[in-house]
Length: 71
Image (cartoon, rainbow, N blue to C red; front, side, top):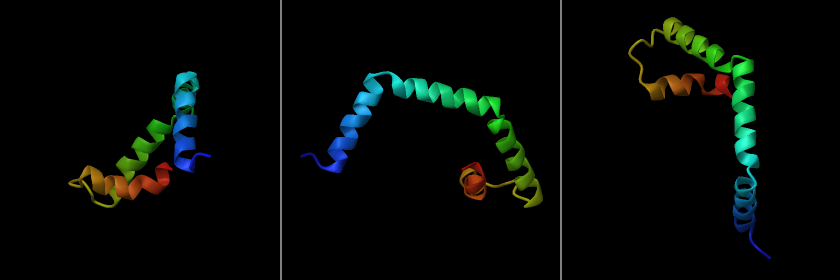
């Protein structure tokens, strides 16, 4: 019997080969557009930068601040 990592690799390859992974990614992207997730996240980032005076922050610093909100 295969170890869990081998099984994971096999299942992932079948998911890709069947085209279902691409279908799922397309559906997810469409759904995120429908609920305006990108716009909401952008607005949150702008507000966070403004209120925390992070105008000169790096991408990594902003990412750390918004990571929980984005999930």
